[in-house]
Length: 71
Image (cartoon, rainbow, N blue to C red; front, side, top):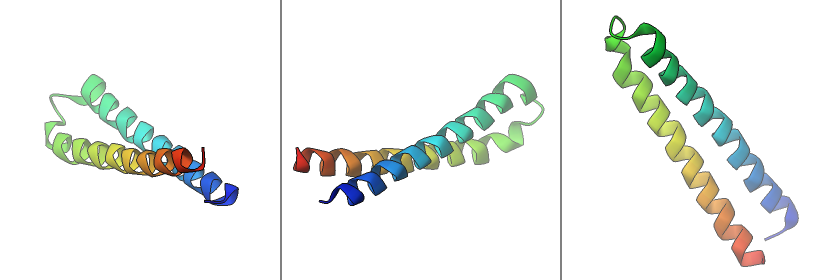
């Protein structure tokens, strides 16, 4: 794998981690500030947070595997 491909994978990890962090902050804000009144939003926000974290994990696993191949 080329250095350019590794950098692209690393960039994907950073992007998906940022998106996961943003989703987690939204979930945190819901829990801290708006529950129990906004309970109807809980499932959608939780699912979005789960999906974002899963996307980060998949990107990170790809990067780690590619990085270990080149080491």
